[in-house]
Amino acid sequence: MSAVVLNEVRKGFYLDSVALMRLSRSIAEMAEVEEAALMMGTPANRQIMAEAGLLVEAGCTAGGGDLVIGIRAATAAVAEAALAEALAQLDRPAIRGGAVSAWRPRTLRSALTEMPDASLVLISVPGDFAAAEARKAIRRGLDAMIFSDNVSLADEAALKREAQALGRLVMGPDCGTAIIGGVPLAFANAVPRGAIGIVGASGTGMQEVSCLIARGGGGISHAIGVGGRDLKPEIGGISTLMAIDALDADPATRRIILISKPPQAEVAAVVLARLGRSAKPATVCFIGARPMAMPANATQAFTLKGAARAALGLAPEAPAPIPVGLAVPAGRRRILGLFAGGTLCAEAQVLLLQAGEPVRSNAPVPGAAREGRADGGHLLLDLGDDAFTRGRPHPMLDPSVRDTPLAEALADPQAAVVLLDMVIGYGAHADPAGHLARMLAAEPRSGGPAIIASVTGTEGDPQGLSAQIATLAEAGVTVAPTNADAAGWALRAIGAGTRR
Image (cartoon, rainbow, N blue to C red; front, side, top):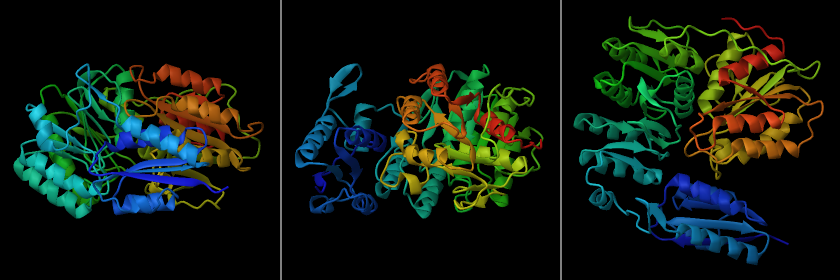
């Protein structure tokens, strides 16, 4: 019996993309539902839905400002029930100010009417519209955080130049993490207020560092995301420079951390020169970069763990002791990494490369090779890459994205260690460790590779750091205190030496 596909289009209906991804997963998990997606009807999204077998003629009429609901199920009755549930959840009243309300602002103007004192706008609309909405915001005297992706590089550059002229900060596009004045935005963690400010072109990098600072007794004044392309030559670090200015002028910030992939030399020179004009000490972590000349007030860290320790005024720490009993199958040396956090994947690559080990990845750092699955060496994958998330939520929202690659890794006859990360906090899946434990319980494990994981998060996060660690340990996963330690344990488990 062939599957049944149903579509419904809601004209002019915007909803935050994170909320849509969560709802998509909720509907897809209903019994006998094969797949479900709720997406804005941009041409790119309609193509994704068509390729996923979720689009029929009814959905093809949608425009970029319309919401498309796609359900594929075993029977018409199941598909109709799933569609009805999706519609019911979309129409469910929201909780505002402690009271139930169905009100949703349809425009920036109506939102500002409700909140005239607002100073920041978080934009999560289809990328085709994001730059225009951000432009409206900065022209009204507001800073903007753009969660949306699929904004062209040219539009980003033009928007940021205009914002710079107006004295307004644009975070993003594709900015998934920020903590402003103690308020976590999008994917972020519950960390205490403190004296350390972070500027980051990496969301998971900022999460890991802010959590390690919190665990070390420190706190965060602000964590300002700038988007992954801000340090490209076409943008020139406009938002990075403005964020440094803001932290430099903030009396509550006494130290600054900069986190990014290595920028090109001309952009790095400008950013480092600006840091050098500050009276505040700084830590620079360009993940994957070689040693660089730093301003007198700055130190270079080569890992996220190192950046957190430097910001706390701590000396580099000796590697965490490898757990007694951690063993790998005899004759195997291959490390397979499956990461939800792109910067955590990059940090692990750096540590393997420092140990003199060959590394391949779909998101290689300098010195690593482009992915080659047929190669017998170490392979570290960023599962947040489009190849894994096309038509599906990010693995931080939907940990099942990792299920198939993990099953393949556990069955790999060369695999000695499988490296994993868990990123918890606001916006993330409610119980990623529980999902992994259930998946592992259904997989044959005897004689297979060791599984080593780390958890990025704090006790104050909705999921609870210690609860997630306990769930993983009960499932037979060896849990390291940091992502860097997890990579170090994997290296020692296979007998590799680390150059420091």
